[in-house]
Image 1 (cartoon, rainbow, N blue to C red):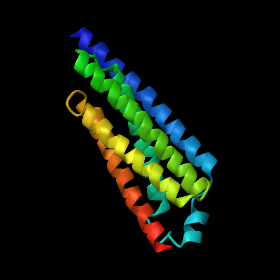
Image 2 (cartoon, rainbow, N blue to C red):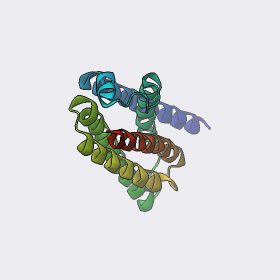
Image 3 (cartoon, rainbow, N blue to C red):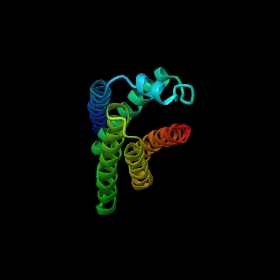
Amino acid sequence: MKMTNSFGKIHKTYALIGGGAGLLMAVSVTATAGNPLPILRLLGADALLPPLWLTGLFWLAGYTLLGAAAGYALACPAGGHSREAALWRGLTFLVVEVTFSFAWYRLFFGSFLLLPAWLYLAVGVAAGVVCFLSWLRTHPLPAWVCGGVTVWLICLLLCHVAVILHN
């Protein structure tokens, strides 16, 4: 029983470290890209989108949870070659998802490049789906966290389409 208790602490520690890293990265991306409100007003899109404070809250919470999910998945025992392969395939596509969605934010709000930003977000969504499917059988909790954030990215993708079509 003591072994299970210490293993649970390891899961929590890795999840906290991963969550902190995810939050730090999300804050750094938003801080360096600048305020999105002027661009949304320039596009006339501020009325099409959810409130900016809600979007920012989901952004920070989503990447905090993704970091925690990655840390949790890393703390899980391998349990065989197929589980190990699923873990690393999921982590690889999680890194792709996060990288491309961060690049979307920088391209859209930092550089005002609508089409390339949309393409980057689409790649991030596709990577999130692959991560979810990779982890679903072997690491269900991190898979559902990744799936939830991917649904949020799909919502952003649709909002982005609405902004492009509006102009």
